[in-house]
Length: 533
Image (cartoon, rainbow, N blue to C red):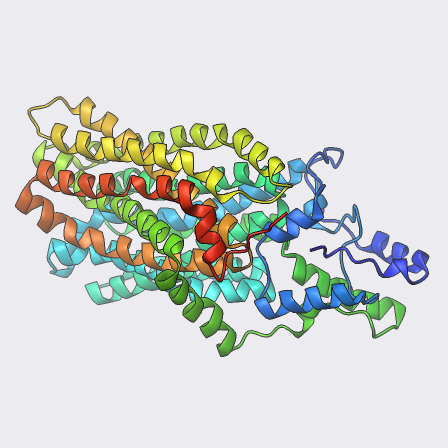
């Protein structure tokens, strides 16, 4: 479909063109000559981008088909359209969004090295102290129920920036907490508010990047989301040893406030329906003609839309759509294991090898190096994916996302077994550290391609499919760290990692099955559109 219906085709064009020229483009810190990524395929752009509430999308389609000359849309090349901003400016915005996501994801793990000191201070067991991690991640499951509909009604800025302030405040609450209950509750609400950028940045990237370029932006966004949990323990251990267990939370609050101020002044609104609503309001004011309108003006945040779109539909898709079920469980499993390493690495390197706290967190950097290596693999798939899209008349090809996912699964499985059986203190440490790099690389490849596959497959219902995935993965990631210490202390590192590696091996056929039968399953689905040419 196209949102660029032009009222000027039926009315005198000059007043409208003048109004369009009067609407200022966002002020860019970069020159505006670089416009190689302007929208060259409006139909493809609107098909793939994060869409507004379903009722609004249906209304837009209806009015476009009726040829309503007063339906406000983007004119070709209009400067106010985020898709028409320069590549340099969009790259800058991507950086700002990535910093928001990184700050929130960093909060999930930065406190992990302080668990033991917090347990001693508050009089709880080490197993209960793991709730400081788990409750933050469970907050990631709850938060999108608030922030996703908020972003679709009021825009991306208002759904993320106030939440960042709340994240900083609850981080301070964690830092000053005098008992375990206060600290755990503050951690939960930190996760709820921290989930705002983690869940909405991907949609914001879809607002500014066309499909041919979006994969690259999403690759670096994934590094921000995954990088937080891997570098957080390294930062947290240094702060805990040098300044005490409260300072990881203080530093998190300071960092989040800093990023908030940076984003407040540098991040424009990028959600087209909100921008078009403002454009319609301006057209009515400057022309005196009340007929100018956009359907987003009638969209309200109500309990029905939240229950239907963000609760009921994700659950229905999770339980009735084989592709959502399999992909969500696969992504959730590897995501949960990433957070399980927050408890496993201290057992392997601090408890078993006797390394001091700061040194024992350095192997997390191997995970991060693996995550960065995965970027190269994901980027290497972009030209092949672009060719598949071109051959499919510019439409997304979900199955073309799957070969890297299989490769990631192989790397992840190898890393699990390798790490488990080289973690013994009698075996030189470099071996299991390299294995951690394999785990990080495999995880990031799987994680990103799972998200890309769901977005490509479900299009209009992508938000619900991704919500199902986010909810499930956050619950699993919140639960697995609680099981880590009992499991690994009882079974031993080798057998425990072998069990988890065996589950990873059983999941290897998932991308192969969907490569073979994905199109057939999409044709059978009630939610996945398939275009027959």
